[in-house]
Amino acid sequence: MASDTPAPADVEQRLRSSFERQRLMATLGARLTRVEAGEVCIEMPFDPAHSQQHGHVHAGAITSIVDSACGYAALSLMPADREVVSVEFKVNFVSPARGSHFVAVGKVVKAGRTITVCTGEVWALEGERSKTVAVMQATMIAVSPAD
Amino acid sequence: MASDTPAPADVEQRLRSSFERQRLMATLGARLTRVEAGEVCIEMPFDPAHSQQHGHVHAGAITSIVDSACGYAALSLMPADREVVSVEFKVNFVSPARGSHFVAVGKVVKAGRTITVCTGEVWALEGERSKTVAVMQATMIAVSPAD
Amino acid sequence: MASDTPAPADVEQRLRSSFERQRLMATLGARLTRVEAGEVCIEMPFDPAHSQQHGHVHAGAITSIVDSACGYAALSLMPADREVVSVEFKVNFVSPARGSHFVAVGKVVKAGRTITVCTGEVWALEGERSKTVAVMQATMIAVSPAD
Amino acid sequence: MASDTPAPADVEQRLRSSFERQRLMATLGARLTRVEAGEVCIEMPFDPAHSQQHGHVHAGAITSIVDSACGYAALSLMPADREVVSVEFKVNFVSPARGSHFVAVGKVVKAGRTITVCTGEVWALEGERSKTVAVMQATMIAVSPAD
Image (tube, rainbow over all chains, first blue to last red; front, side, top):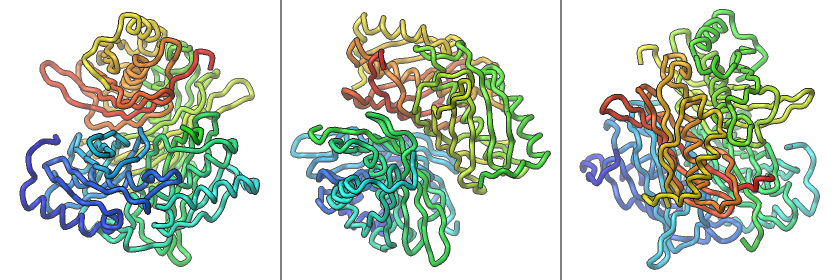
């Protein structure tokens, strides 16, 4: 379902407008860097203010960006009058979140009328090197703005 | 496994010292409010800086406090020379995270030598009312500080 | 949500009739032993035909009974014209599935119009002893029979 | 990590020997059809004896084959003196499990000394058509045969 197809301009604008209202993203320094039909990319710089006890990025901050990436990937394929909410997600943390910045990609695996299933991945970047730090499998639901 | 048994003083001190190094907790305004053997409680006030697009608390902030609560619940039952890392977790979001503050409780379901399984729950509080907003099932692993 | 309230007779009959159509349950020797409003119990005897490589019960057989227990717990609180389907579940296996028989309990954590969240647990029984072997967190959805 | 590299002959033999001891696989009619380094394929024919209430394959049977596929994918990269056990998994069911047979593929995402993370997918096949019915994200652990 995910693709290299750029999202239509109105979809991208709708996503960017919603992303700007997610104030946690600004608090984390996260930016929406790429919006395609069914695939969304979010970047976040390292900031010691978001660390866990060993100085790496806390699992919760990593989860925050990949949850938003999955949610917006789902929203990119929904009709214009729908909004998206996370039903649930599951994340495995496969390497310590060490790096100068972090890139989260969310992709739609299956888009349904009500339920959309996504996978997400987060990479830590440091100079030329990149390393997977987390993988997510998430369930999103389309809701009416009134819900 | 979880209980009303207060954690021994040295365990509580070890947890509090680790919690203070989790700078994301300070960034979120979160406090470690209760430490028992196998059960830990963390509170966080509502702050619009941690919101998602509808003004409720972002799933990632809710996840952050319940992940830490589960991790410290696991650590409270580990030998003094071990540290804890999240292998993975799964969270269901069952109500919008609306309230004046939020309480996350993490409890150990099964403590093993290597792997500890926990469940977590987050309540939103508003005046006299409280409501479950999220439930977690998490897998923690004991590591050596050198790992 | 789960309770000691017996399910109304028509609900119990509806669940039992659906359970009998789940032919995997008969293949596994599983029986629906208790139906309450929001809580359902399924038992399965040990059978070497359902083993994994060490002779214990395969994770997939354990998962089958606790998935059905959670699904029927969800269905027990739905209107009579709805059916239930598993959106997803997550299971931790906390002890080897060794015993003479196994009891799965599914409970509703949050019943919604569309989505119902459940937790499940499986115990292995051997003589007087019982031990938790698995814990589940599951998302169920109400569907129309026509869906 | 997963690849088109055939697993060394001794690894394949070790996996096939373990698979044959998983008697649930024979009960489900499942066969180990492909073993590569970090990727394993299992096929299962449709059988009404493994159905849920609507006559499709029960989520538990689908889970059984993709759990085994993920477990053996993990084992294919472990030293010869290790065995593999499922710590936990999470499965989304994205389409009804309808078809003449089902193919589960398990792939290693990250192989560690202790913990290996896998993803799995199950397709339903019917004539020329195939459709994804389930996606898994799983955590496996290397154990000593004595554990």
